[in-house]
Amino acid sequence: MDIKTICLAILAQGDATGYEIQKAIKDGPLAHFFDASFGSIYPALARLSEGELIACRVVSAAGKPERKVYTILPKGRLQLSNALANVSMTDRIRSPFLAVMLFSSLLSPRELYRLIESRIEVHKSVLAHLDGPAEEPQSTGEKFVQGYARAIHEAALDYLEQHRTELEGEALLTSLSPELEESRG
Image: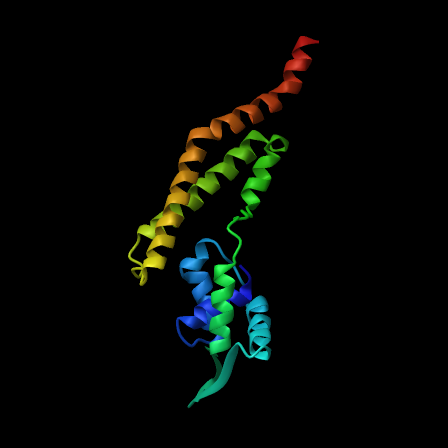
């Protein structure tokens, strides 16, 4: 799903500023699987506005800077409906951690251990956040996504704890290998 569709979906829930859209992405249920910066949000809002899918109005308040508030238009709702109905069902997992683990044989045992420990802490932190006193999900969809995110992080944490020794053992053997060769010679 692209950033334009995400912006339309957020605006379908109510009018918002670019900052509020970015906050919804960063701090809301989307944070579990989508990331976007202001550098991608504002150009997307501009393209949506040019396509007459959203409208923008400037809101002034005494002593505060003007804010641009965006509203989804009927044409935007139709576009959103079509985009949601035709989204690819294949997930792409983009994980720097998994990329590093693919080449884990190039790491020292100490560095590998540190990276795995760090990743375990990430999953524990996310799970603690999901279980924390945060706002309760508002919609059935939000509850579903939160539960799905919890299941993924629990499974990843379990997998790491169950299988880390495979990588760590290989790293240890690889690091000892030159010493073994020398002792045999």
